[in-house]
Amino acid sequence: MRESKVTVKIPRPLYRKIQLVIENSGFSSPTDFVVFVLRDLLGEAERKAVEAPVAEAVEDFSSQDLEAVKNKLKNLGYL
Amino acid sequence: MIAPHGGRLVNRMVEGGERDRLLASAPKLPKVVLNAREMADVDMIAVGAMSPLQGFMSKADYDAVLATRRLNNGLPWTIPIVLAVKPGSSAESYKEGGDVALETQDGQLLAILHVDSKWKMDKGDEARKVLRTDDKAHPGVGYLDSIGDTYLGGTLSVVNRLKYDKYNNRRLDPVETRTLFKAKGWNTIAAFQTRNPIHRAHEYLTKVALEMVDGLMLHPLMGETKSDDVPADVRMQCYEALLAGYYPKERTALVVYPQAMRYGGPSEAVLHAICRKNYGVTHFLVGRDHAGVGNYYGSYDAQKIFDEYTPAELGINLMKFENSFWCKRTNGMASTKSSPATPEERVNLSGTQVREMLRAGQMPPVEFTRPEIAQILINAMKAK
Image (cartoon, rainbow over the protein chains, first blue to last red):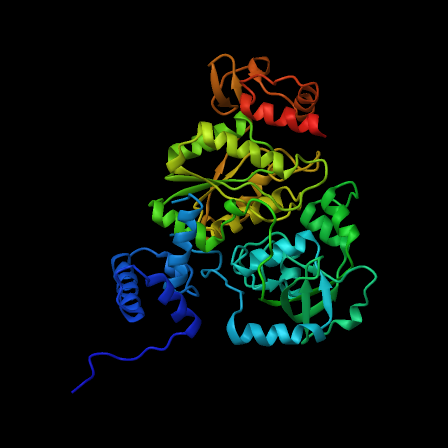
């Protein structure tokens, strides 16, 4: 039978950051968080396929980086 | 969202093992201590603000820019983005195919330049082709005169971002402005660039633009300017005051543009537009004598130069404005395009007149500048 899940490796410092981010957030594990973020990102990409999304222009940036950008914009009062 | 110049937002920041390797190699490399202009260039290249540039220009790109106002691959580009060996340093220590460590003036390593070309430049030729003059009184020519005459080109691996002392709450990289515009739902964004305090005429242009687009980014140049320009601190106070009182917060963003001024008039106007495209801007305002200085350029040369390119290859819309002023006849802001006013019916002060009034502690007319701005400028004059 084919596996329903696969393993994806991420850098350990990033994993530690995620652990910090999800404390008291409702996510039960970093895996849950990553799955949520990826689904959100991929869904957004599918919805916006007709236009060039931010992620296309910033292809070198990960979804976590983009979340960090949004947080920065909020902290600075732009959003 | 608008595509970056060349189609892809460059990212020259290096991380992880690659960064560690470069940091370890840096102490053994020949180095160049960057000046303010070069530091800002490195920082902008690092985050794609000067896409498609991946480093300081190679000789092929440099020659193409001077000869055709395009990069070697045909993309519009008007100003050389170059690194000069410092006067007094021997160019012999820098080899094509070798690496060079690029440092700030206080010794912080910013980047490694992977040198692919080294050449002796002709200062007069560059000045005439880019700045349209070789008069040494022109600040851009003066800059050329102050640097060495050997250029180093190549891609950059940026290991550390430049640290800024000021306005860090107003500094956004292209990926950040693009994210901001998307989050705000702005599909069309106009950017306004100035190196001067913002008066009613500037405000008028931006408001006209705001009537036509979703959002406005006030994007004042905060890189190096000449010593007799209004200091950046004072200008920032003016922008903040104007933004607080006279612009719709939800449709306006004030963001620092870190580039150094070249005073290249028309050539620099194209550079300014292209870089704004990288920040995700769709419309760029070009007023009278954009990026000009003295009497070196015609009032509308900085608008005419865009006719050399097709709209598709520029990829950003231009909003060209004529001289604007308070019109006594129509009792509102207007420009020579929209007002029947005679010159006597226009409230339009020269820079010299304004400076004299401010120095005397006298408020310029409210039709010329907002009282809050005038007060900031008067205070700054007093503090001098």
